[in-house]
Amino acid sequence: MKPANLWHWEGRANRSFYLKVGAGAFSLKILIDYLVITFLFHRAWSPLFYWRPFGVVQTITGKTGADAGMSLTMLFISLPFLWLGLAMTVKRLRDAGHPVWLVCLFFVPLVNLVYFAVLCFLPSVEVSLIEEAAPWPAVRPLDRWIPHTQFGSAILAIGLTTLLGLLFAALGTQVVATYGWGLFVALPFCLGLFSVLLHSYHAPRNFGDCVLVSIIPIGILGLLLLAVAMEGLICIVMAAPIACILALLGGSLGFGIQAAHWARRHTPALLSVVVLLTPSFFGVEHFLKPQPGIFEVKSAMEVNAPPERVWQQVVSFAEIPPPQEAIFRAGIAYPIRAEISGHGPGAVRHCVFSTGPFVEPITVWDEPRLLRFSVTANPAPMNELTPYSHIEPAHLHGYFESHQGQFLLTPLPGGRTLLEGTTWYSHTMWPEQYWHFWSDYIIHHIHLRVLRHIKTQTEALPR
Image (cartoon, rainbow, N blue to C red):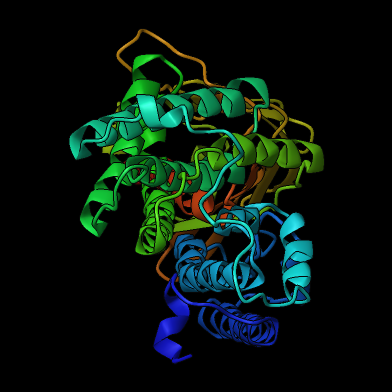
């Protein structure tokens, strides 16, 4: 097998070759992760990261401050290895005579480790005993209600896939209340695969048709989530990139399955994978209750005033003018003012946001150098942008938690001050690397709004 063919869905891979490619790819991934994390982002790396089923780098915290680009970089590095793992698993299943759609188990945490080990021992078979696209027995009634025309089957595939997506999105967010890999990875992948296999039930379809049929339901699903007041526009926009990529990946696999299937002879198409896999994925996440990592975001700004004058604005500051930044005007919570009751350690600071106050008991009062505080109450992270007056998705409460913050004032030559604001936080939305990129970006802009206001207020005071 040529290296270029490793990423193709077609072909077979015996157990020896599957083990060699898997071990080699995992070793290469570890090496690349180590080099990028250690030398590019200057973070501590540990092989223990790979034992956490819901994220490889989620526990990494920076010694020099969090870099919002690190998590997105690690996610993009993972994508070719994800594709390689799926393609090789499809080849191994075909070689072992098992249904190709079982590749969906690749996404189930912990189960996928046992799954890989089993595939490394299954012997090859000359002829598949189970047709790779067959769902369950006695599905011939499908012949009557699935349209034979290309347009009709596309409309049915898009409509039914969208309906299933809405059903499972409601199950994941409203019933199981898990914003994790099941919702943002397994569901879009399965929807893309499901729609293509349904569309190609009666006849083979070209790659362009498969791409359209896999991606359109994701867009319609986003509009429906907005229309039924289940989610707001900002959250849908943030989730769209990863959902579209995974839907395209599922659609690509569907194209490969139906192409191989129609190259031999007509058999029933797979219609069960999304129904069976997605709820089980939600259940695995709900049972395991993965623990989130703690992330750090640090922002800094120079102030043309000595630390003693800056300190007074850090402890409490007057109301900040209405925001002009697009993310805040779109609904992301933004700071308005800061109030304090008491003096020194034990005093309680309230940083009032557009959605409510953060309650911040002071833990370190080192005037005029360091003000550190814990966070005992978190308001909602946003007001959802929605056509309705107000909605309350579950992720607005308890899925994003700020744990601690501080202001560090460092004197600079010429009577100036370097003012640094730091926040330590966690969130329980997976893939954690992907959502970490968005949350770092938002927190950094919150920092800048406060730091700019402190700078403006301090420099306006008479000397």
